[in-house]
Length: 122
Image 1 (cartoon, rainbow, N blue to C red):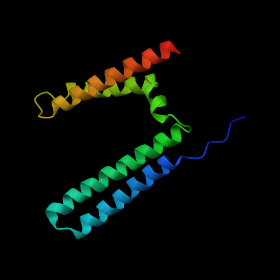
Image 2 (cartoon, rainbow, N blue to C red; image 1 turned 45 degrees about the vertical axis):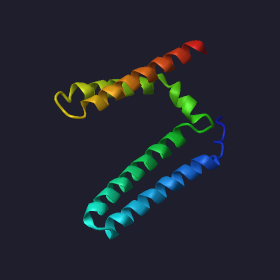
Image 3 (cartoon, rainbow, N blue to C red; image 1 turned 90 degrees about the horizontal axis):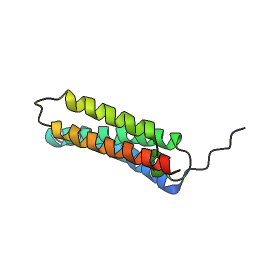
Image 4 (cartoon, rainbow, N blue to C red; image 1 turned 120 degrees about the vertical axis):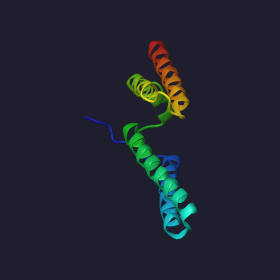
């Protein structure tokens, strides 16, 4: 028998509402503002919408408190981030933003190392 999900905290609801409002405001700004500002507003709306979906998935996958701690202890997720970042780094030879993927790979390696260390400690 499974336990019922705990109710979402005020912080989770506030995060989702803020991201949804950001997406709506950015979308309206993209329609109303002049071209140079409208394009930026559309990008902000798209980023807010993307982060809304990501936050919703994380909040559904990690039902209780300590979401960050649960994600930090997730060895498969840390390994996946490391693999994807290394593949992106290797595929962008000569590109101007290659350093960004190197930083992402370093972050993924740190995440994986932390997850393995925390799993060993438990």
